[in-house]
Amino acid sequence: MEQGQKISLVEIILMNMIVIPADLFELVATPCAVIPIIGQILLVLKWIVAGTSWLIIQFWLIMKGLKGLWFLGGGLLDGIANFLAIDIPFGKTASLNLTIYLANHPKIAQVAQIAGAAAGKPELPAPGK
Image (cartoon, rainbow, N blue to C red; front, side, top):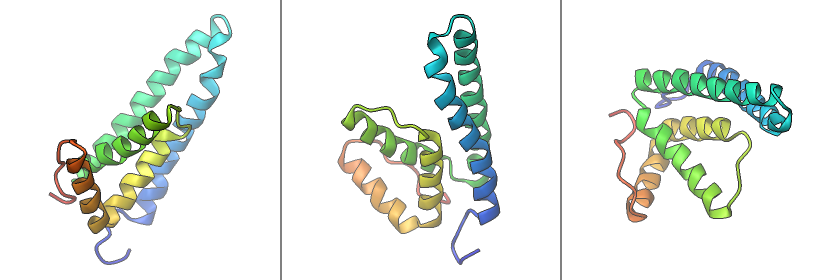
């Protein structure tokens, strides 16, 4: 692990092993909503899988002291998606990897916080605080 990195390669792989299947399930379950009964079951399961993966990642980030970065990374992607009026496939995976990148590069995270404050978003705690 490089000097100053908060998240190791093993942790990155483990968290992606949780988020990627959740995103794949969401990608498959959403179009199946039109199928009677099975589609509705899949939609309920989609929310359960998404919520469970979110809780696991949130707990992991809190234990690492990085909970604010998850909202910063996810907020940036959500803002881009809202601006473009699209739904981002693999949004959780992209948010997680952006969060990991910001955690391992605190100078870039600080620039993103300043940009968020300039846009009227509340300031998040600095990484590691």
